[in-house]
Image (cartoon, rainbow, N blue to C red; front, side, top):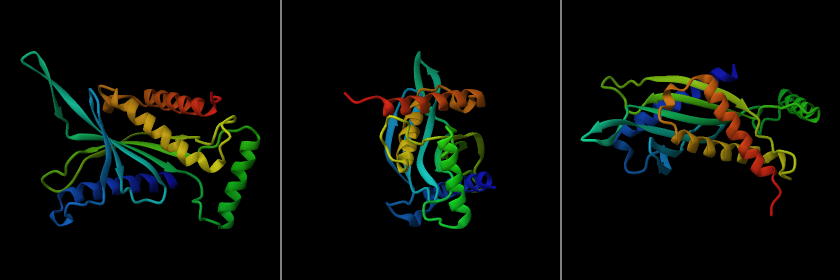
Length: 212
């Protein structure tokens, strides 16, 4: 199943990332790099490069902080678990021209013409260890996943291929919302669904709004 393969790819990326950080032969330049970091009250989000899967569109990692009281001051200390935020492309890959891929594209186009929403991307939220343990292993858990439709909204005048850019914009906005959550690892699935739906609606509303 596609879902199983995507989860396998995601967990494989986490494993390779953690191993790259413990490999002394990597030198100063590592395959998995943070290109941007933004700090907030409850943690830090990092925009990552190097998720080497063909469907990867956007990759963020949230490192939460644990709040402790010390002499009437809040002291932030890192927790051993990170929240990984992955957005991947659904459907046939662009270079796939097999008959089944062509049929799937035609079906999606027909569904859109009938006014149906067709998922274009999948958002995965995974909890994983910040470091490998002493035995060289790590802990991980899929917290939530959701298929989303990033097809350009009517009124945006954007071509269909802009869906990936919309997915990137959505993932960025979602990562910033996660930065405002005091305990993201404990959020139930239904709350994640609401946050995801609200974020996507906000992004699409801005795209469809007339420019002034």
